[in-house]
Image (cartoon, rainbow, N blue to C red; front, top):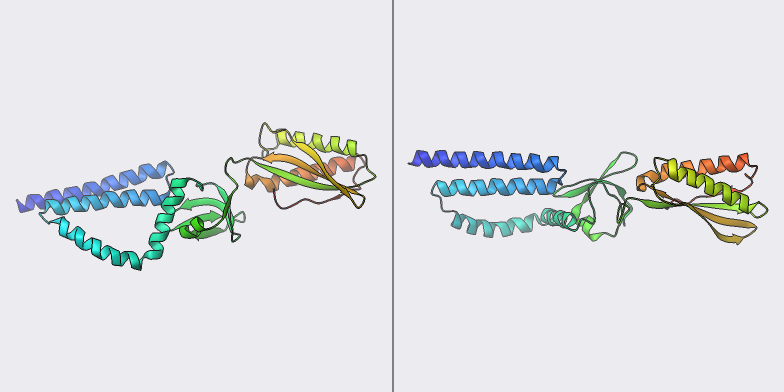
Length: 251
C-alpha cells in the first residue's frame, strides 16, 4: 500500500512537471510575458507537490500554517523582489505598457520594450544597448508611451526662411515633396494628408512647419532625414536655397 502511494505520488509530481512545461511552451509560443509564464508554471508545480504529499498521507494543513508564518518572514526579507513581482503583474494587467512599445521614463531612459519579467522590464535602445529597469521603478515613474493610443505619430519639421523669398512657390514645393514622401516612404503612415503651416514672422525670417505622420516612433529619424534632404534638394533645384533651416529633436 505504501509503495503504491509512493508510486502515485511520483506519477502526480511527474505529471505536474509535464503539464507545467506544456503550459509554459504554449504560453511562450503565444508571446505571453515571461512573468505570467513563470507564475503559471510555478503554481502548477506547487499544486502537484501538495497533491503528492496528500497522497503519501502527509497532512499539508500544518505545513501550510507553518509556511504562512515563515512566509511572512520571507516576504519581509524579499520585500524589493516581491514589490517588483507585483509591479510586473500591475504593468501587464493595465496594458499601459506592452511588449514592443517604445517608451521614455521621466529619468531619461528610453527604448523599445523587449520583455516584462517578474523582476524587471528590459528596454532596447536605438544603439542596440539594453536597459534593465526594475518593475517598481516603472510603476512609480512618469512615462511617455509613444506607441499609445496608436503606433502612428506626427513629425513636425521646422523651417526658417528669409523674408525676400517667393513664399507661395516654396509652400507649393514643400507640400508636393511632403505628399510624395507620405504616400511612398516605407517610414510614413498611410492615409494622412501632410500640412504646411506658417507659424511666425520675425527678424526678417518666416517660420513654417511641415507636418507628416510616421508609422511609429522608431521611424521618425529616417522619415525626418528623407523629408529634410528632399525638401532642400527641390528648393535648391528651384533656386530657392537661400533659407536657413532648423529642425527640432522632438516630434
